[in-house]
Image (cartoon, rainbow, N blue to C red):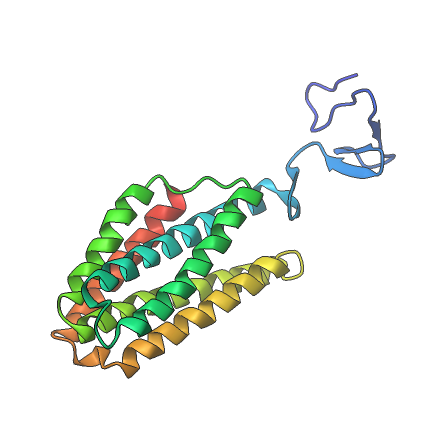
Amino acid sequence: MERAAGLWRLRPLYCSLPGRPGIRRRGCSMVYAGAIRHHSSGLYTDEEKALLDRIIRVDHAGEYGANRIYAGQMVVLGRSSVGPVIQHMWNQEKDHLKKFNELMISNRVRPTALLPFWNVAGFALGFGTALLGRKGAMACTVAVEETISNHYNNQIRTLMERDPEKHKELLQTIKKFRDDEMEHHDTGLEHDAEQAPAYFLLKNAIQMGCRAAVYLSERI
């Protein structure tokens, strides 16, 4: 039997639940035949799944871009006194990217179509600011990590308002990475980022670019 105009259909091996149209049961598992779907991390409405897709997609893009920035900086400053500091931050970004690669697969989220562009732009930003010297590289770190930390804080607030228990694992991941990014931000300040040439102009320009990257990566 099928109901053409409703949210649910009855098929072999399924039975409807009395007084609860729109829900089917097969064996011991419950399946919503309308706007709720089952995903690896639980049952989500289409709206919730779209939100999680945007979060994972943009965070993956951000961590990918951060990796490329540090790669560019290491080409110029890898053998300098600040090389080990940059390498340490880069290693943490590699762990972040690995985690979001896993989340992309487990949640079946497509990456942003702009990854090839962020590949080139991220490396160019890291390389270019490193040419300004240690202070320029650290100014870039402060600008980028401050923007990413604020972005993570916005995501945390959104998920907490929705359902903190349902999103517990993702919240823990984002909070941990947010703390790492703030550590990088503070490291940049400790290494004289604010003494870089035209620091505030450089910082504002980089942050404008980062905010544009966030906006586009969520949607494309």
